[in-house]
Amino acid sequence: GIQVEQSPPDLILQEGANSTLRCNFSDSVNNLQWFHQNPWGQLINLFYIPSGTKQNGRLSATTVATERYSLLYISSSQTTDSGVYFCAVRGYSSASKIIFGSGTRLSIRP
Amino acid sequence: SQTIHQWPATLVQPVGSPLSLECTVEGTSNPNLYWYRQAAGRGLQLLFYSVGIGQISSEVPQNLSASRPQDRQFILSSKKLLLSDSGFYLCAYAAGLNTEAFFGQGTRLTVV
Image (cartoon, rainbow over all chains, first blue to last red; front, side, top):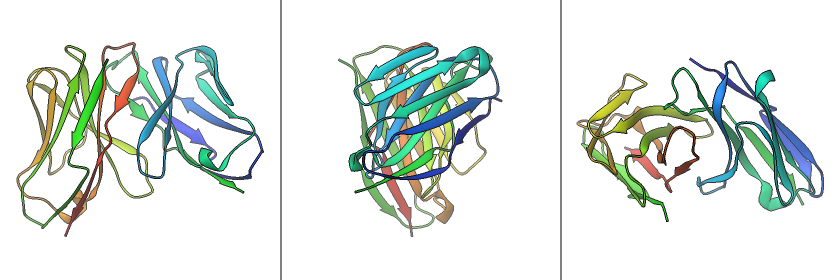
């Protein structure tokens, strides 16, 4: 099945810093999402981005489907950005399954 | 609008007891439905998914089962819980193949 790898696994930054999170996937995908899991465990939808670039405030994401990766950018980090960021994909061969990467744990220090 | 409800939020059960977690979706028909489990500090493991009533695909052999008795209802069950069944269980839905998935609030299960 499709494999999803996220890097880095952990990231510690000072408030105000910028960061880039990466998601690599092993096969073609028709669906890619970024989520933020808050300290209470809730998964918050950030982007639905099977290809192209999207921006929402301080966050933006880019997916290059032909090269099998996606990037999540966080600018001017705030302490509320802390948590785990997950990438999740659906492949063409088994389009119903949603496969998650192992996540990037982001800690923003005040 | 579409919403997803999952309950209970927390559950403490003794080893060997049965389990039933329920998830319901409103505002969409024939959604794809999913159950995930997350161990402490770990990623999300896909347990079951369903593309229609009575259609269940199992991803991981285990002590759990799933059922979809109605179009927008997905139930996760166990006849006898094990300590290793402890974790955070999340239900999700997607309206179609090329749409976003949305998650419920999760159930934190502790087996004692």
